Image (cartoon, rainbow, N blue to C red; front, side, top):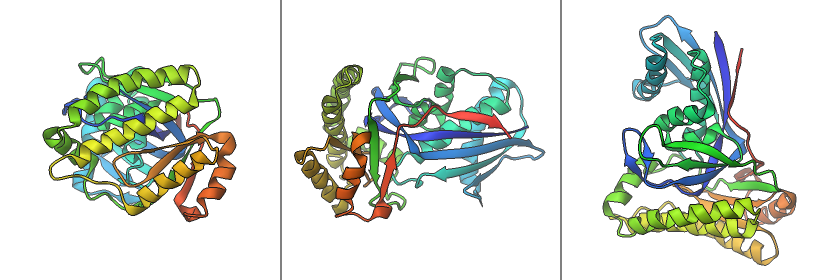
Length: 322
């Protein structure tokens, strides 16, 4: 048996930043994201006669350290199924890895749905979000398409993701890839340092609860302006916690600031555009699908066309036998 899965990356509009439980990856606050069609991971899995799992990423055999992380994730499925066979994993990222574009989210989501089939577990999507969460927190949200909320919960069972809305009301996103190299400091490390040293962190988590409530109301009412304003403010609050860490953590680059100023000008010019940033220098633009062509024309005056990724809304993760 051999299975191939596909899962899309997601970009959080209300950010997940910090863990309540490091081992189970239970977050400090609820988060909400938009799944993107243009950024995705495809993964193939099959059983092999071997004493160890084998992991290829983009056709490159991974070292022991990277394979161990995948093996620990596969162990969850081995334990549940009582099948201890080794697995060959071939994963292909159509997302720049470790550049703040959620490659781990699509990667572990794709692996979760593939392993579910391989080990014949028949887990439903809600349960799959719990498994994906243990590989990468944001992977829980990539099990679903559209707008997705990850409920932080308080234990392994209650911390899961759910679809909020199909996002089929003229929604799209433009990603400005300003720097696709590996980050100097990983999200995991930055989260830990922020929690330990930022005097602003408590305010971020407390206000995020109100942000979740308000953005869900905006989505329900299809209020694009309110949704965009909340997303912008939440992202900048998250970066403020990092800037106030000791020592300060800054993911902004000069081009990040330039992009934000460009988006503000586009808004003044009548375009419905709002920005967000994750733990990386790249800027994401929440926009109307119907306005994308004209927005991109304007962006190309300041940015190279190779830096611009246009994305519609992504679907649920899926898997098939090959």
